[in-house]
Image 1 (cartoon, rainbow, N blue to C red):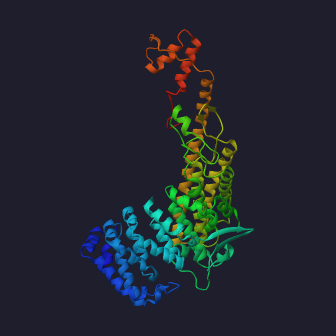
Image 2 (image 1 turned 180 degrees about the vertical axis):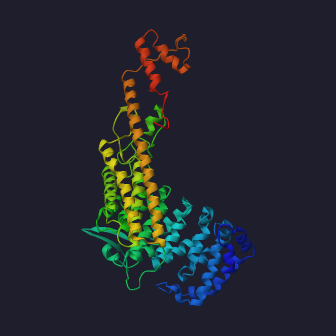
Image 3 (image 1 turned 30 degrees about the vertical axis):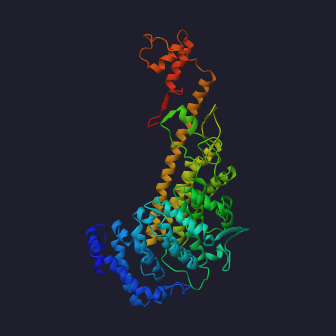
Length: 542
């Protein structure tokens, strides 16, 4: 305990270095291996995996040793590299619940290289544990391996897709809407079918504690693990899809129908009144990761300050169900599914703005803010990838400008205000409870994060509105010029009247010499920049 105190805090790098140089990390792991060997040997025969019958004194000593390992790995790549060969041993200690889980997360949360160097034996071990226990804590560890500081670790993402999705698809549960009921089902020898309403009767506080890995499911309820585990597996799917992982997306789509992960199936789950809020949040995020922020969708520039005709012909190619770069590329969702996605966002915002949407318990408020965050993220992606644009408007040859539909513009006028009302409703409900717990502080942080996300969405809406109006002006002048093109001849000798023009402009003026009407048209071209070799610039304050 005293050594762990020396390693604690960001300012104790010198203490962590001394611990490494003295070999205390290896000594601690060797002691843990000897102490826990009799108990981890019983792991295979222990179906519940609860504590493995470890005496209290032994548990205390092991917890202190793992506390030392965790403190020594605080933001230290050197300590993580030192423990890399010992990760399978630390993983075998997970069922003992003596701190190996936190130590593993701490050791590899700051280095993508170390995460990518994790041995395959660790992946196989965690898959075997998931097959036996189906606990969210193990899923959270798997998720942690897929990214480092928000940057996806592609090698680990693909390894988890192979181990879990391709080789062990039975680890996933299937959701199905039947009438007014939402059912979660598992096939096989230990199969079951459970109603979502029955699964939430145990209380949302217990569900949240299991999702966060702070509690085990109740022994009195044989299905208490189902909903927390399913939510964690949906988060795992989002983790392997991060960064537009095409390999993961293709593998998921191949099994989408069997797992209930098709766009139609997820939309039915989100639209169902029987779906718990905890599932709504993750299904909303999964829709964005699996069907919106994917190839071939391209982001529509929120505002273009410099416009050239050559770029405008290609970059502003809009589609009613997402934007694609090349002509003929199909969007990842149909137009009908895109319309349902937008309608789902509008209904979710109205639902979250209601006075009774925050619930009575702390966990209910937490799940509500999580759901609001998922809806805002989905809305931002729909905006970014052109789902509120239509392939319509002015066309000239290959020129296509993505215009907003008038009906959608009216639909979006009210949405930001409703989002802020939803944020305010959650903040008012939190203050009314007057709770000063860790969960309340976490909920307040989520409210602030949601407010920042809504502000960013409002900024994007403002820029898109400006972009829309400027695009209409540009397209108007392009149409006028294209209707009566100015003949271009060989450049004439500059006169005193046009000697101040550049060489590019001289050809246009020379072509109109002796013709006052053509000269006026060339001046218009120079002013508005409607020929391919000129640019229309929009300043910051436009």
